[in-house]
Amino acid sequence: MGKFNLKTVNITRMVGVVFLFLALVFGVSGFLNQHPGRFTFSDVVEDFYANISSELFSIATTVLLIDYLNERRENQRRKELLIRELGSTSNAIALRAVAELKAEGWLTDESLRGANLVEANLSHAVLSSTSFAGACFERAQLNHVDFREADLTGVSFEGAQMEETDLRGAKLADAHFARADLTGVRLTGQDLRNVNLFGAEINNANLDEVNLSEAKINGLDLRGSSLRKAQLHRAKLHFVNLKGGTLSEANLEKANLNGANLAGAYLNWTNLRGAYLFNADLTGADLSGADLTEAHVTPEQLATVKSLKKATLPDGTKQ
Image (cartoon, rainbow, N blue to C red; front, top):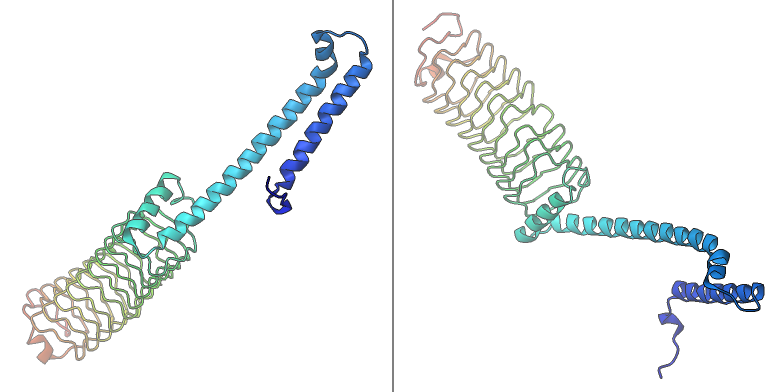
């Protein structure tokens, strides 16, 4: 026989067994004391039924409570494990975690608020309507992710790869996209006035109807992006690269486009009243129908554009 080892003994279980043994001893002793002679089964029921029913009720309640607490603890442990896996650099592991979190309803119950997902590989994940407020996705792989209607308030995407990511309808107040690759991103109709886009690359993106009024987005790379009907009133767009971009019917009134690259851009029917265009490259730009009333632009610059048909020139004359 092996030696007795106190370290391997479950003290709680031992105490339970001892008390169960004592309960049986005292119960049988008390019954025999009350019935020293012969007794029947009805005598047993009569003496014990009240105590037995109350004890069984207490035991059942205790067992159910313990089971509930154990299940709750296990669910919390599993949730924490899945959130850690969500931040995996392995796309397969991260996507499996997304599926399991969704099945448990943990994608939409705010369990992911403030999550640390630095360098996570979540490319192609469907995370629509998820609350990630305050989370960190720095340097994460988020290409083709569906973030539609998600709460991304205060989220940091600094240095993240977000090609073709869908951000339509997402809450983006105070979000940080500094130095992120947003090539082909979909941001239609978003209010980006309080969003940090410093150094972000936003080539061929859909920014139709976005609100960037009075925003400071100097030096952004927006080549080939679409900003149809965008609100850019008084925006600071120094040295922005909008080569080949589309700004049809956008509002650029009093915007500062000093040194901007607008070569080959579509600015037809765009509001450029009072805009600053000094040193901007307008080579091959289409300004058909544009309103350039009081715009700060030279005749030499206008001579390089593709079309000024039906445009209003800085002096108020129409073409």
